[in-house]
Image 1 (cartoon, rainbow, N blue to C red):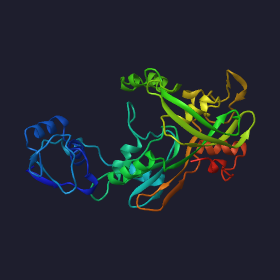
Image 2 (cartoon, rainbow, N blue to C red):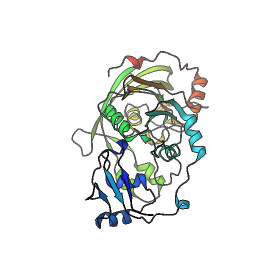
Image 3 (cartoon, one colour):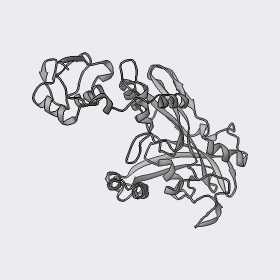
Image 4 (cartoon, rainbow, N blue to C red):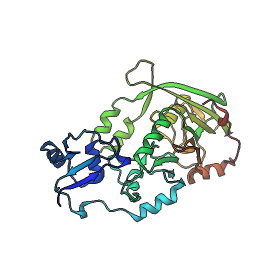
Length: 348
C-alpha cells in the first residue's frame, strides 16, 4: 500500500483523527496509529497533528503505507442481519431509521453479548461505507421504538433534539397491582446502586453484574443523584392484580421507568431487578398483589410511541406494535390496544 490522501467528508466534520481512522480503517491497530501520528507520517493539510485533532470538512488527510490485518480477520457483513433490520424497520427515509427492537436483543455490546443492534448496523453501510448511528438506547428486555441516524451529522441533530426535550416518548407497561391515584407524576432523584461502576468494569461475572447494576432512589445533593420525572396514567386494569399503564418520561435516566414503578410500589411485571415477583408468586408485602398464571416471565415494557421534529422539517411520529409476550397478556385479560390513552393529555 502506497501513500494515500483522503478528503474529509461532510459526515466526518468535527470527528477526532483517531476515530476517523477507526471508521475508515478499522483493521489498523491503535498502537500503530499512535506511532505514525507521533512520527509525523500522518498529516492534515500538510501539517503535523495529534490523534485528538478535530477534522473539518474538505481537509486532506495524508495516510502512509499501513500494516493492516488481512481481510479474513475482519468481521463479515451479515446478510441475515441486514434482513433482520429490514424486518424491524417501522419507518425509513434518507436520513434515519426507526426500528421495532424485539425483547431480549441488546442495543449495544458488552461482556458476553455477541449479537446486538449496534453490531448489526454494520450490515447496512451507505454508498460511502458509513454505517448508521444509534441516537438513543433501550434496555435489552424493553421492546419497541428505537431511533437510528444514517449519518453522524443527523445523529448530532437528533441528539440535540433529545437533550432539549423536544422528543415526546410514550411507553406502555403492565404493573403489579393498581396504582393510586389513577393518574400521577413521579418525581425522584436516582443514583447508581453501590458498586454499579465496579461491576460494569469487572470481568465476566454477568450474574453479579446483573444484581449490582440497579438504580436507587437518592436524596437531592447525594453523589451522582440526578432528578427524574415521569407522568403515568392507568389505561385499563384487572383489580387488584395488575394495571396497564401509559408512561411519559420527561427525563431520560438509566432504568427510569422501571425504578419509578418500583418506587411507587407497583413494579413492572417480569422485572426481577426492580422488585417484580416470578409469575404465579405473590409479593411478600402484599399477598393480594400476584402475577396471574399464564403471564410470561418477561419484562412487560414497550417503547410504544416516539414523536419528535425531523431535522429537515416536519414531524416524525412512529408507533410500535405490542411484542408477542405482551400481546398474549393483553389477549388474556381482554385489553384493547386501540383504547384511548389518557397520557396523551399529560404535560410536556
